[in-house]
Length: 109
View 1 (cartoon, rainbow, N blue to C red):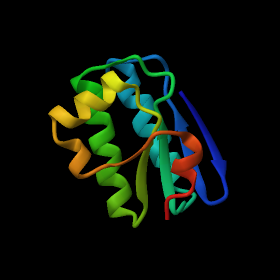
View 2: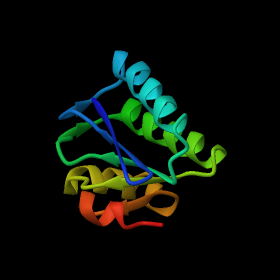
View 3: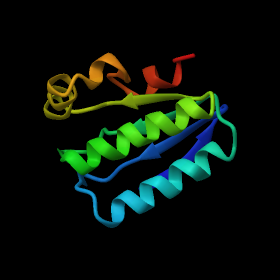
View 4: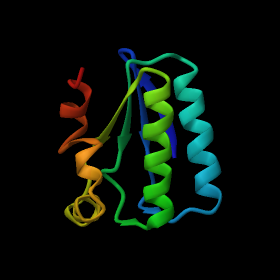
């Protein structure tokens, strides 16, 4: 996992498998670090993610909650079709802002 900052946005890039365990702690720490910089949005870049389980979904929902509490928008970027289908099945498409590319996620206000 990697955190970068660009134009008042924090970008979290995730690895190819998001299965929980120590990743939950690392992700939560990076979200808190991102929010400490008061960005207008946090972008979670899923372009490399091939596998996402319920722990991964929980991490994303937790990040959405943290962002909302901090008047910040969470934007999901570049989910694979498989991951997007998981968001649809769980109705997360109703609460998350999802964009098909990192570039389009950067343009969200």
